[in-house]
Image 1 (spheres, chains in turn red, orange):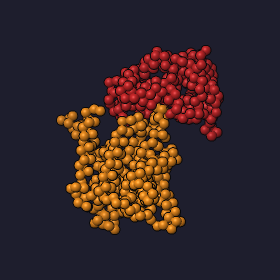
Image 2 (tube, chains in turn green, cyan):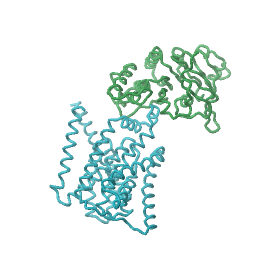
Image 3 (tube, rainbow over the protein chains, first blue to last red):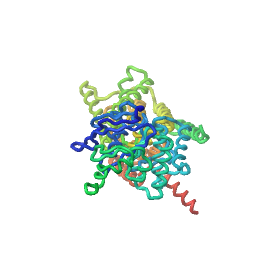
Image 4 (cartoon, rainbow over the protein chains, first blue to last red):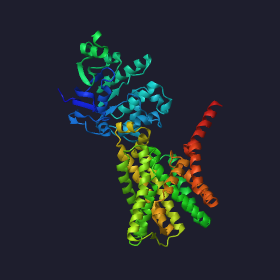
Length: 243
Length: 310
């Protein structure tokens, strides 16, 4: 098999005495959508922060196409091609929708400038169905639209790997349907995605493979069907009685 | 360049041409006020270039200004005056880079305190070394008059405006706006945030040092308490905030009225100047938190809204 796009080997993050991520190994291959799931506090978001460079691993290696990136600051990791959304949406409040997306196009993995950056940002807005609101100010948007802006901003950097941190959380049923359709579209385009998610329907329909975490460690890995019927996984989510 | 750019540029040239004519129409008093306004325009505008988008309040203006003043004071015996201004600017940029690398990783309040301390620290070093050498101050004797200083400051102001305009249209300017909005997003978008901040701080420091170098001949006799006075740093901040830092032309809108206010206060109440300055600072912060520019923008928005309903 070819070199994985992203691989973690023994990735560990300690906060004082607490081991938030414990000796984690997994690979993500090209065009794969991988779900990172587990109960609250199991270390999913910390893992995402380690990959994006928001946090430095205490030990272990993280590599992008075989090159170690674990020691790099977030801006270098972004430039090498890893883009992320945030669990609580982060937009640039003084700017318009288009300018927000342009930030990704100008400074990301593939760097563009001027009219080229604008037209690329615009095409990403079309991809997330927000091109009509391009010149709106970000504080005029609905919740799902702010999420679309953030997604378009990460896409505009043409990342090799896209990290979505609970991108579907907080949406109402109609929005959720639109959100899943949108991520399906990205999947069809052959993008490589890691998604941290709690919405099980989304995980079943979107993920090729899942890694399940509990108390910082990997407890299962496989297709969504496999892991969701795993006794260990059910115990982690629901407790001993239901397993 | 678009049509609006050409129009703005023409307006800019026209305003500078009018300002340059001041020595021919105004008297000595007007010229003195003109020098003060030009000086604070350069200082406040270059201060806002950095502090406007990043929201880092720097109180180091006096450090850069004093550095420039002393560059002229010490160098005038050995070097051509016209060489000293670029040297002062380069020294200002170097000092800004050192300070920037050491402190811009710090968040807001620590940065403010550090920059205030820096100016005081340099002043103490200069005072100490003068005591050591037995010298008390420096004489800067040139044949430059008030008019020459005024024109030099105008040229410097033009350079600051042009740099600000170019930075605003560059990747660096865009990066700074993103940093000001959300630093976390900035670094996750691939922006080297420390480098962007240090570069802009260097531009700001170089402009303040050049201003000091140009003004040294005006003082004739310079000493640390004059060149590194912390009042200068505070006044620059007040003026820039009064005008508004959201636009390149914002600070000058604060500089002009504040210079007149300062003139009125210091000539009528020479013993209560500091007290009244403090009060006016409080009033500005309470009444105009976003400066004159912010007030104009919100008034415009309100009128548009009323127009839309009418």
